[in-house]
Image (cartoon, rainbow, N blue to C red):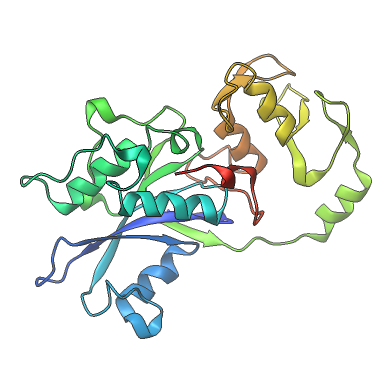
Length: 264
C-alpha cells in the first residue's frame, strides 16, 4: 500500500548500497520522496546532491513527515545533519566505534523526537524499507502521538475544489471559544461523531496550552465541546481528512506558519 499525503514536507535518510561506499548515510529534505530518490541516483546534473552524485545507488530507507511547513522540516534536517552543533542536541554522544552510520543516525533522530519543538509536532516516523528497520531503544521511545509506521509514501498534489471555495463563502460557523466567525482555512473541529465543536485553530491551540504557557504547540487537551481528552495531532489529521488512517498524515499547506518561529 502506498500512502498519499497532501502538502508533503519530509526529512529522509538515504543508505548507500554501492560496494565502494556501502553504509554511507545522507540526510535530506523533500516535498516529493519518489522524485527525490530518482534525482539522487541520476546524479548532480539531474538535481541530485553533490555528496550523493557518483556514489549510488542509494535507497531511501527512512522518512520523518508531518511537518507544518518546509521551514520546520529544513530546521529538522539541519539538526539531524549537525547534531553536535545544534544546541538542542548537546546531550547526544558522538558516534562510537561499534556503531554503524545507520545506527548512529537512528540514535540521533530518536533523541530529536524527544526534545522540543519536535517532540510536540504531529510527526510520523516511517520506515520505507523493512530490511533496514531499527527499533527504538527502551529509553528513547518517542511520545505517544508520534506513530512508527511502515511502507511507501507519495506526495499528492493539493486539488483546489471550487465547491470548497463556494462553501467557504456561504458557510458561516462560530468559534466555540471566541464566538467570532470561522473561515474554512482556520477551522478545526472534533473528530468524535457526536461532538459539534468548531474553533479557530489558534483559539483551540491557546485553549490547550493554558497550563503550558511556555510552549507554542499543544500535544493534547480537553475538547471544549465534548470535554473528552484528544491529541492535537489527531485533530490536525482529522482536519486534513486522514484521521481514519494514521498511515496518512498530512500537514499544513500554508507557506508561512506560526511554528516556523521555533528555534533549533
